[in-house]
Image (cartoon, rainbow, N blue to C red):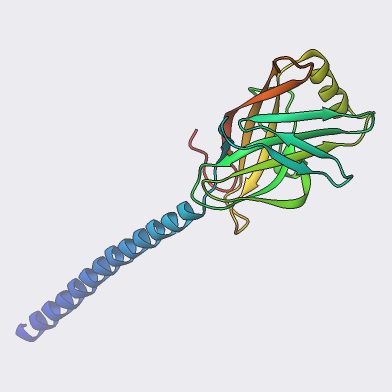
Length: 214
């Protein structure tokens, strides 16, 4: 009977030790995972870009298009120029995030309060455009189909001075953390000139590759 008691006690002690080790391992693993996630968030935060309109006192930028056209845009504004065959649009931007912004594409939403289209439906840029952290940059778009709906829409905006919106798709330098920022453009006549310039404001930001806070 005594021998049996010692065996039982030994088994219970072994089971208790195993349980304690399992609990310690669980908490140690969870702590390590939390530390790893925290480190990952810190790394991603250091790479994360966020684009907003540039300041009104930022310098004028002159942007070149593939067909040889040059378009100048003032800080805090957009420039929209039309010809018989193409529409040229340039947005003056600033990167308010900590990471390099790499622009991917653009879209013209018809509903300013509606959701954005899928990134695969955006017009892809023909070149990579980089905007460094804390620095100014631009997004450029060209519509070269005079018979298409987008050309007619922009022509209507120019003729009537109607506000419109541009969704800009971009991400970090690693190709992740994609964001869509909706820029609102409002017309403003230029003093002592027949030209119209377009003031900009950032309406909404959507996260594509990570949870959206809304």
